[in-house]
Image (cartoon, rainbow, N blue to C red):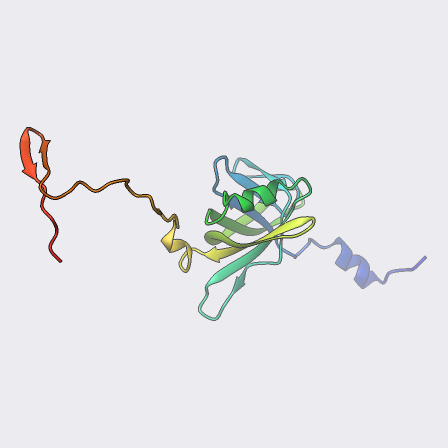
Amino acid sequence: MRNLSAQHVAAASNTVTIPGYLVRINTSPEIRLSTFGTVLFGGEKWLDGVAIDGVKRDGSGIATARLTIPNHDNAWSALILTSTINNQRCEVWEGHMDAAGLVHAQLVLQGALEASDIGETSVSVQVAHAGVRAQFLPRLRIGAPLFNHITPPGTIITWGGVKYTLEARNG
């Protein structure tokens, strides 16, 4: 058996200073995940099931984060492969849990999900800052066929009781 010094005993009894994270993915229904375990915060239940290395900021203050989520039943793989969570809004809170089990957190990142990787037992998803990439949401492209025919020039149509003759576009 090993004896600990008084300094080590005191350090072990201190409050944990490593922050925990809450992650909200704005799908329908919302997905709320926590690194604290299952907790209540803001009157909502946040489920255990996310790992996050922390929110990183570059020199200009742009924040990003990488989420790692367990994928034992391949449900997250399905969400990624069907593009269900791609480009979804995401919010990350950072905080601490007090001795009573209450979480005190503040919002540190609002962004969108992108750059997903599917592993054997987990998925990783990048959260990009809203000011950089999420400003163009939604990123849906409408492709052909946009319509199946073009009415030929000279055709007369009636709209609101008025007759119009369609003309060809010049140029």
